[in-house]
Length: 590
Image (cartoon, rainbow, N blue to C red; front, side, top):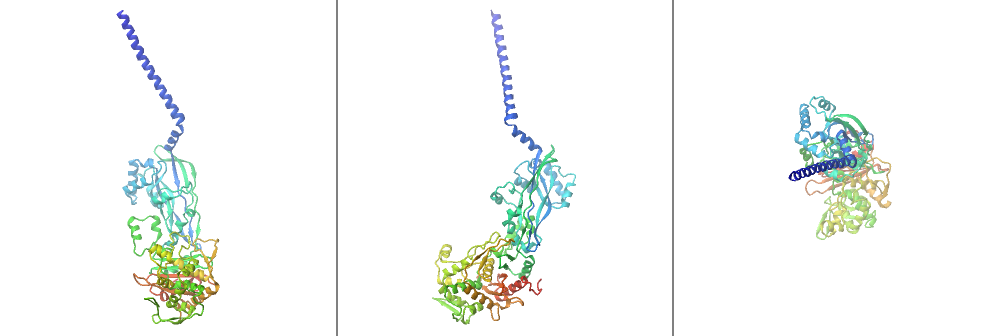
């Protein structure tokens, strides 16, 4: 009996062990079946994709930007072929690849920094199978020297890249602008676009036309899919989409006239702007000092960038559209028209100038301390008589000045196709209360009548005003891109009053006028002098004029910081600029 019990116990134990192993085997097969279903059916696409990414590499092909030319076809911005050394993040994770690359750069005598390279890899990394640029702007010789180095990593490869070159250099930098590598802020604010989207390392317009017409100039991005072997070497191209070339632009700028304007300014700090009064085309926009955009587009060090930005002369500032100045006596063409239209004065209304105007306890002096005596409207413009405008300001009033100034488009940007245009200031009681929390005084109107006080205009606005006066009262939006779609807007100026203003401006440059020094033989011109008081240094000099009087074509403004006298300094430069544009230049300074 005992033996039977022992045999029964042994059999039961064997059955238990057998059932355990049967359960383990069944469970293993079940898990294997589940894994097969997951990996081969449900997750198949995912793992096929991962496998493809291990043998596929995507190469982003940047577009070639459209080129920029002046009105005569002279190049202002061109594309130059250079080479970038590219690599894939999957390969660059290997220390061996990075060290071999750094050693190759050392042997090729190319500037390099291991820390900078590491930062660049991290900053440009956004997909492990998409190539990133490690070194940029290599010449053909530099690139071939690297590739011929036996130690150069096989995983890396060159990519032809178009870089920007500016043949005109500093002459057109404030208009054309420059390009540079996209910043993090620009990358975050860029609009998502499949064909024109941006990634780290891309080039983007930073200033001027390059920035304003970025979408037009950029073109569309291309892409190339290549197959690589286990060592990361390219074997064949599987698919390729070529990049689209950006659109070329022709500007209204005349490069030869632009060069002549810089020669006229010399080492003076200031601006010359010339506009075609028949359509608003900007022919000259010369802001001095200037800068060379070429180093900026190819890359400068932080120290070089700081030196340029913190230069006291502010060479990167386009004074023509961003500089805001008191216009001085050239503003009398606007306030004089307002006086006529308001009925405060007529053609022959006499006002005596004793050299000073008294308002309550304040005295306002004329620039000619002994006075001009009896003045009428045309003679007051000719002599730039301050007292004449002081007297009329109290009858005209600030509201009328504002109304007429607004019709000339003042107090707001002119709408030029360049970034960063300032609006200027056309002051009013409401503006002063909002900006300065002060009331408007009669003395403010006195100052406004001669273009001083709170009035601020950009040189472009000054030139636009005189273009509108010259063409008979039509405002054309100033623009730098050549186009046939030009529409003028009436400034609603009454012809009989506008003719009197034009006569006064003609008298300014006649014998005895304050601007007679501006006259150049063969050029029939009109204009107005201005000397702007400057509390922190020498007075500024300004002159605005147009020619020919019989059929106006060009308006020119010259503003010289610290020039002291509009008639003596700025006027002659405007006369010579007009002569050059009209083909009457004697050849001096060419």
